[in-house]
Length: 136
Image 1 (cartoon, rainbow, N blue to C red):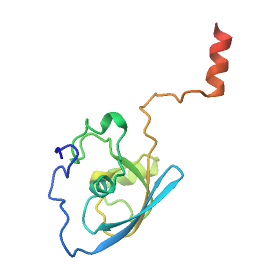
Image 2 (image 1 turned 45 degrees about the horizontal axis):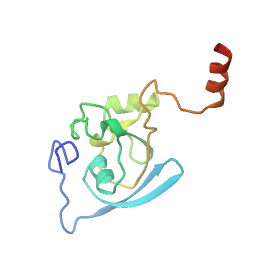
Image 3 (image 1 turned 180 degrees about the horizontal axis):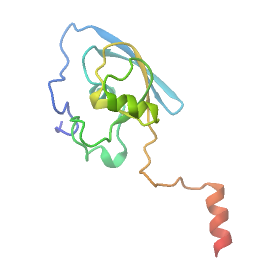
Image 4 (image 1 turned 120 degrees about the horizontal axis):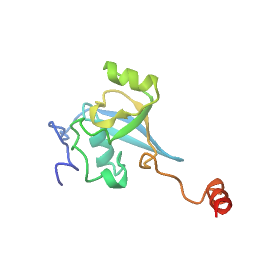
């Protein structure tokens, strides 16, 4: 496992006999329940469960959990309020929170964000096809 895929900046390895916390992860229409070790980062828990907080392009191009690249965003739907002012501000304006900066310390529900590249468009939408037919 590379550093970019791994725990990143900090010792986030599981320990035997640790207390667990129930997480619910929502990815589109799918809901997954995970028992996560208390104190681990949400990013590491998601990756260990096979649920990536990354888009295909950023799975390898990320900061490894150091909070520098802003590519591991999730939406906390139910759970602890944000600790830092920048997270509270992001919540207020609807921006995702960085999963590498969220410590799993109590039950929560998180949603994985849509992984389109900014400015990307969805293919095969009716409006796009009609616009291109009229312009030609």
